[in-house]
Length: 351
Ligand code: PBG
Image (cartoon, rainbow, N blue to C red; front, top):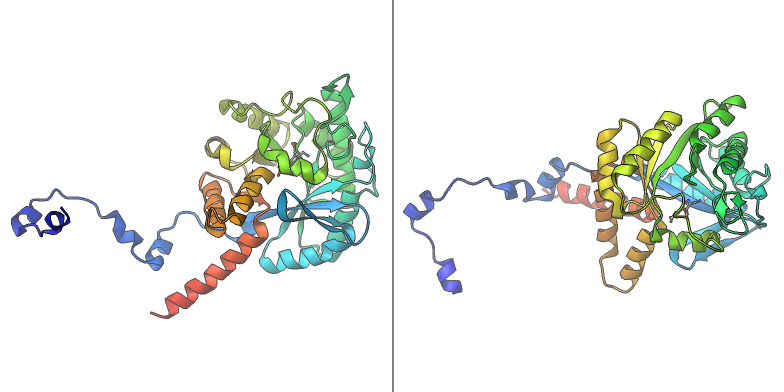
C-alpha cells in the first residue's frame, strides 16, 4: 500500500494535476509565519485583576485559582514592581472588606480596602492604570449584587448605591470605574454622579454583556460572594442569548459607557466578534476565573501543555475582536511572551 502511494507519478501525470494554491508556503518557517501573522499578543494587552484584602502582611493563595493571591494593601507595591517590569500597565481592583452587611456600607467607605489601595497605587506607581470593579456583591452579607427588596435585588435603589461606590473610587483617584452588577440604568446614574462631583474625566468601563455564568465559581470563592440564596439570573444575561448582548451594549453606550466588556471570554467568542463588528468603541474581554481554573487544573495534571493552551486561548480571544483582555494569566503570559521574543531573536540571528 505504502509502496503504491510512494511510487512517483509520471511527468505527464504531474503536469496534468489541477492547479492548486500552496497555503503551506507561508507556514514553512517561524520567520515566514511571523510576517503573515494576523494577531499578536503583547504584555500591554493584559489587565490584571488584584484582590485586595484587609489586614497587613497578607498574601493568601486562592484555593481554586492557583498562583492568584488575596493581598493586603501593604503587599501591593511589590506586586506593582513585578507587573510594571513585565510590561503590564493596568490593574482591576476587587475588595475583600473586613465586614459585610446588608447595605454594602464598606463598599463606599473612604477608608475601605479598595479606596486605600487606589490611593497607594497612585502614590507609588502613578503610571499604573487603576480600574476598580464597582459592585456590591463582595460587600453584602447576603452576597447579592445590590440592595434587596424581599428576595429580589432592588434595581433603582441599587443603582444609587453603585453611583456612591463609584464616586468613592473616583475620589480615591481611580482612572476608570467598571460596574459589574448588570442593573438597568447604572451607567447613566454613575455618569451623572461622577459629573456632578467634578469627576467628568473618570471613564466608565461597563461590563455591558455579562452572562449568568458558572465560570465565575472560583472568583466567588476568592471574595466570598456566593449568594446566600438564589442566583444572579434575574440580572445577568442568559447564556443562550447572543443578539441580546448587542442591545445591552447599545444601552450602556447610550448611557455614557466609554469602554465595554464582554464576559466570560472563551465560551462567548461569537459575542465578542459581533460586538466588535457592531460598535466602534474599545472592547475588552474578561477571561474569567473558571476559564483560568480549568487550564491550571489540566496543566497540573499534565493533561495539556499549559503554556501553549494559555497563549492559544488569549490569541483566540484577541482574534475574535477583543482589544485588551482582563486575565489572571497576565503575568505568566507576559513572561512567556518575553521568553519567546528572546528565543525568536536568537533563532533569527543564527541564520
Ligand atoms: C461581580 C463580579 C464577578 C466577577 C467579576 N465581577 C462575579 C459575579 O458576577 O458573580 C467574576 C470574575 C471572574 O469570575 O473571574 N463583582
